[in-house]
Length: 167
Image (cartoon, rainbow, N blue to C red; front, side, top):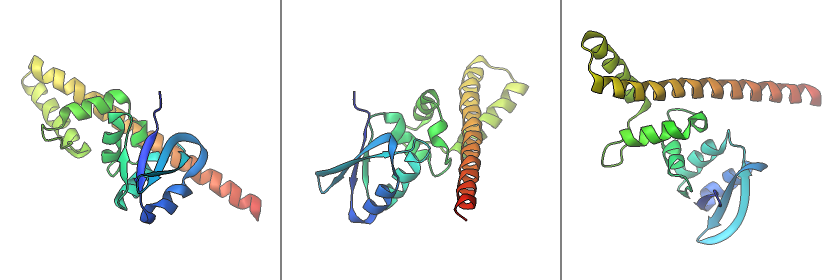
């Protein structure tokens, strides 16, 4: 089963996409004007950054997993979106409105806070179920933020160490 991401690239984003090629990680198949060009492999910690940048330059992106389409949507709000679990992504998709508009992370946190306060004042089982779902999303979001910070710090330390070794 191929879980590649397919990018219909253009000249505006091709060079940037190719700069993310690390030889390992998530396989991304690149096409130009409908013709296969090559496969690149992007570090899982950087894949949504690369795809977000490419999409901003007009690339069309097709995902094997629907959750990854939602992850790309949430990248702008959460740079560590790749750390969100598929279960959390499924919940975020379920909370989207019938038109397919995703709720923002801020909207979800506001709902979480509001329903939590309502439960404290007037306990209702139906609200408790929604509160628990929102709680899992908010907790996974916080975990993803932490994981991303740790990744960025590690990346900075590695780059600093490499810079010192070249001097």
